[in-house]
Length: 249
Image (cartoon, rainbow, N blue to C red; front, side, top):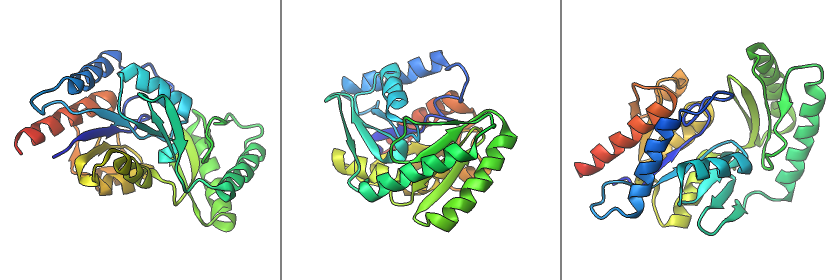
């Protein structure tokens, strides 16, 4: 039985640098609200696991009216909206913090004279974003080579608009396992939807896995269900599929 539905943000709940699909998010928010007063075991609560930093994830928590803890910085940070507290995964130690700082300095030197920007709000990873696909691909290749040579315990992930360098021991799968431990759930009780390579390990570990129609082909090949719809409509479709599957159990 799935007891918690978890979604990525970029490429799932929203499209980077585009307006939100407000009516779709409102329907998902209504389902989440229903889970608070649910007496028949139908609606289940919603959470987030995103590579985005705390401020953005906290804002999305408000948009959806979430009451369950959510994950930011690719699962390395946890925000509890009921207690209004944040905490970092125990693996985020001083050595990791120092390495992230060094990587940010490297990125700053790399992107001079490029239409790219550093995401300074992230604390457990180094990341940049931009809207020019050529710049993103160029940055990905440069960063991946640097990380492979000097930071073998880190991994480089990319999307069409971003590149992130994440500690291999602080990824989304590990974050979801941490969230499950906090909530007294097993991974088999989690449904997760993601769209890029950084989601693959988490999708493989989840009890039920989804990819929206716009997901990368490498993600579509590992999930239980690829939705007919892209982005937020795909997330809503996945959520409603979970309710259908639960009702049969």
